[in-house]
Image 1 (cartoon, rainbow, N blue to C red):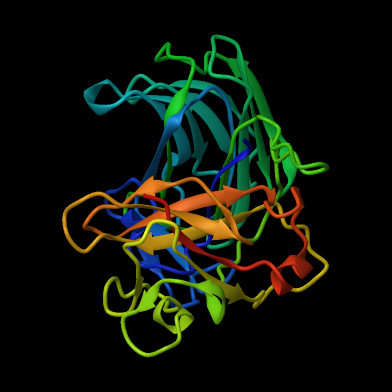
Image 2: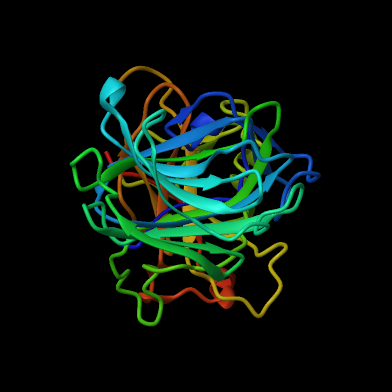
Length: 340
């Protein structure tokens, strides 16, 4: 495993469709606030949180543009739940444009180190990445801005004592100011197993592109709620959650669609592809679905009566277990499978 999560904020407008928790952030799809594509999430200060299976290390990146710099987290890693939650590692942008690494919850935070000033400037996107070697008494945190290492510190990255984190969050500055965040990624430090593309280190100032279906492929075993074409029921931005859809109650049924590469100009390196299936069940009960990529069915996830995104990130093409190529989209089809 390497990739955990990717977001472009270009294909939906409700953060909780894709993130676990959202306090007050909103998604702007106007194309006026984004770095790539049409969307960016706006945080002032609190943003969304992503809950995952606890992991002992992490590397992450975000494109960050703020209207001002009251000292506040831009992203961080939390261990524990409820009242016992502890911010294990926090990446801070300071008023002078420097970047700091903090640990622990306020007001008892500990500063492990601070970079030189003027690395992040007002109203300009900077790509901020951090890598945490381990959550331990002597963990190393490395911070990069726009591809350059600006800070490396070693200290107690495990104030909660669990040796892991289970929540990743992104934030804005607050204090009357806000931030747009775009093109985010989260990985662990385990080699992906894809030759030449381990995805367990800094990826750099990446750009994430969201694509929707542009045609029907095969098989087409689900039922469109209107008309004869399938892809036109599931290609809207943002999702209309129940107005147009395809459906199936038959285990094993698969729908697959043609996808393009709009906005992606070669040559490019594709680190990963994340499939997002916005889905729900129409009555209380039990149903699970999974992505189907080139006929390879992925990891199943249960549905509820409320819409949510079933997500899976593929570090490489599951059809040939090789690194993704832009030309793969000419032949590889993407869709959904009913698994139970």
